[in-house]
Amino acid sequence: MSLSRALALLLVALLAACAPAAPRPASVAPEDRAAIAARLEADIAALSSDAMAGRKPGTEGGRETYAWIEQRMGEAGLVSGTNDPGSYWRLPVDLLSVTPESAELVLGQGRRRVVVPTEDAAVFTPRRRALAFGGPGTGVPVVFVGYGDGSVLGDALAGAVAVMLADPGRDQARREALFRQRATAVLTILPDRDALAALRAREDRPRLQLASEEQDHLAAYITDKAFAEVIGARRWAGWKKEAEAGDHAFAPLELNLSVSIEATSDRREFASQNIIGMIPGSVPGSGAVLVLGHWDHLGECGPPEAIDRICNGAADNASGIAMMLELARRLKAGPPPARDVYFLATTAEEPGLLGIRAFVKNPPFPLASIVAAFNLDMMAVAPAGSPVGYIGRGRDAALDDVVLAAMGNRGRTLGDQTLADSFLQRQDGWALVQAGVPAVLLSSTYGTRAILDPFIASRYHQPSDEVEGIELGGAIDDLLLHEDLIRTLADPQKYPAPAKTRP
Image (cartoon, rainbow, N blue to C red; front, side):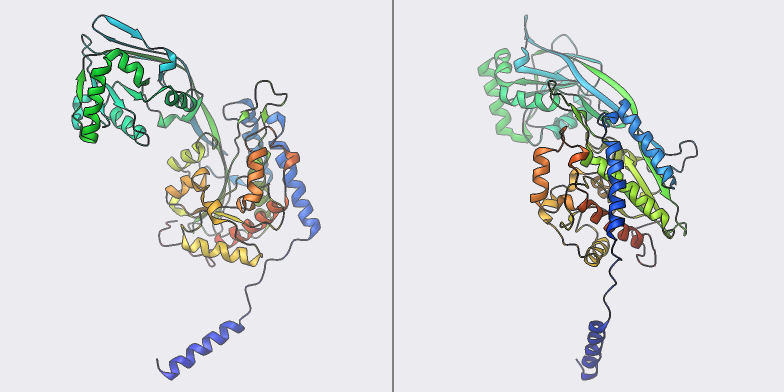
C-alpha cells in the first residue's frame, strides 16, 4: 500500500470517529407512557373479557372479536386493506372442523370375521361417513407394502387397501404418498397398544384446518398383536421379516385378507375472518410494511369441573392486537409514510397458523412488495428494560442491520437467541418467511427464560391468562421500538427496497 493511500485511509477513519452518533429517539415522558399503558390495558381488557368467550373462531365470541377490531381500526383512522370494494375490512378464511365419532375395523380370512376391539384399532376420516371394503370377492386388492410407500406399483395401487408397517418419522409422508396413488384406505400396523394410545391422543379430538387443504382420507390403525391373531402369527412373522430384509425396496404383495373399514365424523364448515386495514403511502408503488398479530384464542379450555373455564388470552394474544391498534393510532397521527403500512389481524393461529396461511395463499396485494413484516404475539409479559427476543434473526441481513441499529438507538439489549430461535416455526411470521417475506417477531417476552418460563408454566393457554396478570413495561418498550422501525422501513430514502422486492 502506498503512503498516500495509507494516509487517506487514516483520515477517513479519524473523520468517522469524530462523526456524531445517530441520534437516539426522543424519550417518552412518564405521563405519555402512562397514557399508552392505559390505552393498551383498556384494549386488552376488552379483547380478553368473558364477553369474548376466549375468541375461538366459529363462535359468537370470535365474531364479536373481529367486529370489535373492525370498529377500532376505523377509529384509529385506518382505511380498508382488502383492496376489495365489496369487503371493507374482512378477508374470509374458510375453515373445516372435524371431530371423530365412531369407527369399526373388521378383518377376516375365509369364513372367519373379527371385529377388532377399540383398544387394538382406530379409524379416522374427515368425511361424515366413510366406508371401504377389500379382499377376495370384492374386486379391491389388499396390498402389503411393508416399510415402503407403494411407489413401485404406480397406478396399480389405485383403488386398493394398502397395509403398511409403522416407521416413526416417515409414516405421514408414506401415508400421503399412498393416498396420492389413489389408495382407497391405508391400514397402519402399530407396534403395541401404547403406540395406539399415543396416536389417539393426537388424532381423537376436534381438528381445525383450512377447507382448501382438506384431504379425503380413510386411515385405519391396528396393533401388531391383533393383526397377527387374524393373519396367523407364523405367517405374519415371515412377512415382516421379508419387509425388514428388503427395507424400502420390499416388493409389495397382495394379501388373502378381507377388510372392512368404517368411520364417521362430526363435520362443520364455516368462515372466519382475517381483518386488514392500512395507512396508504404517499409514494404509490414503493412497497409496503406489514404489521400482524393473531386475534384468536382457545375459547373454553379449562377442565369441565372448573368454575372458570374461559381461556381469555390476555397476553396471548389480546396484547398483540392492542399493540397493533396503538401503533396504528400513533403512526396515523404522525407524518404520512411513503410506503403503505398494512395492519393484519389473523384468525385461527392457535390450531396451526391457518389464518396467515390463507392470507399467503390469496393476498390482497403482492407479497413481493412487502419490505418487512412484524408479528406481534404475547407482548405483555416482561417488565420494562428487559432484553429483546429476536425471532427470525439471520434470515435477512438488511433487515437485521436496521433492527439491531434501532435497538442500539433505544438502548435495548439482545436476549437469548437460542430461546428466540426455538419459536421461529410456532408463530404467524413463519408462513410469511416460507413465502419469501422478511418477517420477524420482536418481543421482550422471548428475551430470557427467567421471564418466559413462569408465564408458560402458570398462564399460557390457561384460564389464568387474564388482564390482571399482564405486564406493560416491556410491552411499551417494544411498541416504541416497533414505531421507530416502521417509520424507518416505510421510508424508501432510509431503506431502499431490496432487489428481490417487487413493489
